[in-house]
Length: 345
Image (cartoon, rainbow, N blue to C red):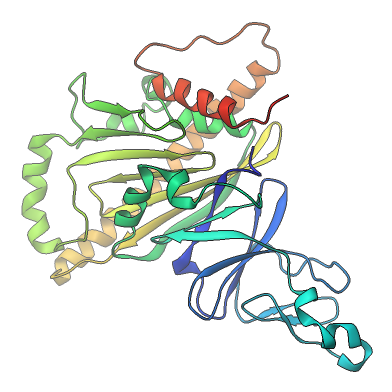
């Protein structure tokens, strides 16, 4: 399933002109970098000389250089620096035959996606109604404000499904979501959007009284590229969620299966640019971001604990789970998308 889907890999703003980035998607080790036109390219993270891994996970400065024999590859994956070049006449004669194995790679806004399969839909067709969202959300994104990677002792589907429903909030998040203001408490406030067969999202309106109070602070904070008066949670199938409240930052999570009962979550909070901000407003944004980072990590810890308990239960379960109508519709939607994406038995 991961082989045929477009998988979220990383962010363009993390890749400077000469940087490269190691990432594992599914069971494939990849190397990302920008070409001379600034477009993202994805290559198999394997040297074409003696098959050494070219780089470890994360961002690395400078050109791609094999740690084994120092072969250097350019931004198009061609071998351009070979010690003792005369010993490799076949490479000198036809360097294109020793180019790094490449995969389909495209970006929408700041988000980089990779498709491991040789054939498949375009990124725009695959993303459907989420393409425009990612494009607009990228406006003004300028830096990663907070980042962490943690393993959750649960299957990747358990971790994602947990993010798709708020039914567990009163039991699990009493010290976090249960204590925040700013969100409407109306019963019908969260609205689900399930019209795309792969992806889903919700919008939860901000509390009008909170918005009125916040407006006075906005005069100091300034303007940001995309202001909206709600919280949104986007599930972009199969491995990406994006959340934001009012658009002044975006929380981006990639879910990487490690084993049947373990998932690595890569969490980034990306800040946006503000115009006409006062010195006081800049300090206010710093505080808002810092509080948001701390809140995110507390919520994540709470979710890690409950996902571990869910995984433990699943391993002993003898019955099929039951989903609540309305409150767990996004979980059902995700499960349908998963079954549809699975190859025929």
